Length: 383
Image (cartoon, rainbow, N blue to C red):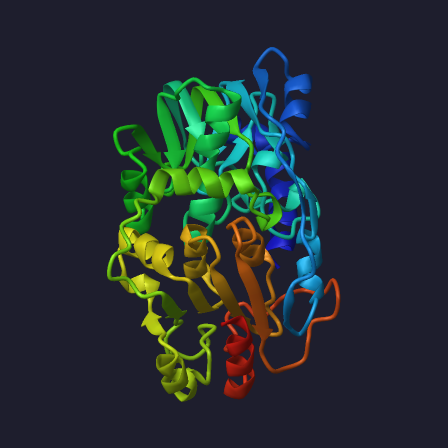
């Protein structure tokens, strides 16, 4: 529905573009930073960075075995890193949508889910851009789709753009444009030592036009995390302070219905406790506590959710059992865990009809039902 509305409202907005002046919607799209730089050489400079690894992964173990949703992560040639420098470039909100002075949206840096063309981008939804604030000096775009409201996307899509900037541009930006509206946003920036930088909160800033807009490429391509991102995060956040932390944890989603909870959690819990597991609700912990909890855990059972992003802190040899529903099977945490040395990953998919290959995963918040006997049998193999 939002795609159709974006198409319609965007078309009307572009017709009315001359009436709204500088707030007019993009009139064209560039598929990449290099294409934008070639099309508008007087306003843009392309700064190439290093190429990154090709990743080859073997079949994933689980029930239902070798699910098609993991195929996208089996072989991956990650795009080379780069930064696009734009004189007078505009960035819009938590989307991190980037617009050139010539009215082009740079789509490689402005990704959004399930778009078939740039005309469906949510930036079109209001019919014009937000109020534009002019900022002197350089502004680095860190904001990216999902980063304003999701721990996974902030940690793996937003913050590693600092690493992209370091590797492809080198110079420090005067200001950073990123979400800062939640506790975990602010905690992660503080823990990373970046709170001394001048920050522009993308969640409330609307649109910013910078004297020099620095646009690092998106690092977490298709939610397939490259090895360098994991190394970069671990270097900046791990402290080794894991004393008195549990070595086996079960990551709960709670008990409220339609929250992607595990329906049989109460039934299976005595058996998990007998095997030495401690129940953890990461949402009740500070970011530092989450990091240290996962850094100490040799075995993790978890229902699919952003809290499992903390697997990035896992020790070498971690064993993971990932629980998912049949209508929301995702590859992202397997590709994350695969970057941890000696790790073992298995998954269990709950009861219910499977989504056919290539189908839409629509059960985002559907609760998960898995026979406790099946879960325990898979767990005991992992242990």
